[in-house]
Image (cartoon, rainbow, N blue to C red; front, side, top):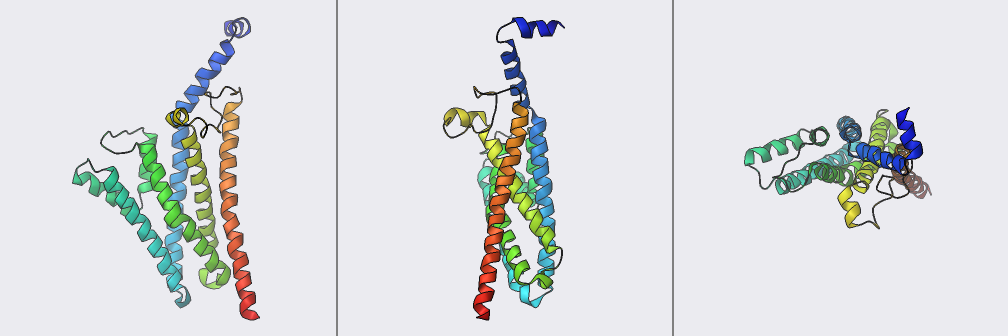
Amino acid sequence: MQINTLFDEVIGFEEFMLVLANNAARDSIYGMVYRVSIGAMLSLTDAATDIYVIATYYRSDELRGQADALVVMIAINLSIQIAFVFANYSAKKWTSKLKEVLICLLFLRPPVDAYRVGMADEDEETATDRLDELIVNKGIELAIEGVPGCILQVYVWLTSPEEAGTYALVSILCSALTTGYTSAIIAFDIDIDIDRRKNQPKFYGYVMTSQRRDAKRDEPTKQSKERIGFFLFSLTHFFKYFFFVKLKTIGTYKTVIT
């Protein structure tokens, strides 16, 4: 084939084509849509299981305090997200602000943010772009509700497994998967951002892209491995807290018995 002649005889043609292919893969919106859509589905599933767990806790007199704690976490999470809405949409009309607040209150923030990022919906009147808005909202959710709520559910399941119910493990697993996946995707998307790599090249750049001089032909496969590695690292880090809570619980029981 004629294209093979170019690869064989033209010096640097293969590297040139690799740069074009890698830039096209990096800038393609479909990979972003895939990543944020999975994250949105995990967040919705996590929210649904959390609501079920709260309802289960309220059926037990012993777990009403834990149910109240989960409700407070959700309320604080929504409050901070709403405050961010007013800061991010300060230049827009009140109707737009109220619409965004309603999205938060209906727990539709993850799919809406994912849809906007996937459709490359840019709004010049907002203080941040769509990807940064998604990252901030996911960070708030993880810090205020996701991680603390899951640790609380683990503690309840270890101390009162019968009252917590069988499906409490499903909620714990959903929270762990959401935490690990969201942390991995935030780290990945921030690192491959072109502006961040130009401004802070010594900090960003651990993900293989065509901008790195050592980029190879199998770069897409390496990026997939890196995303999986980020996810497993975040998931392992989360389960470290799981075993810590378990050990603390066992130690508490031994102290009470002795």
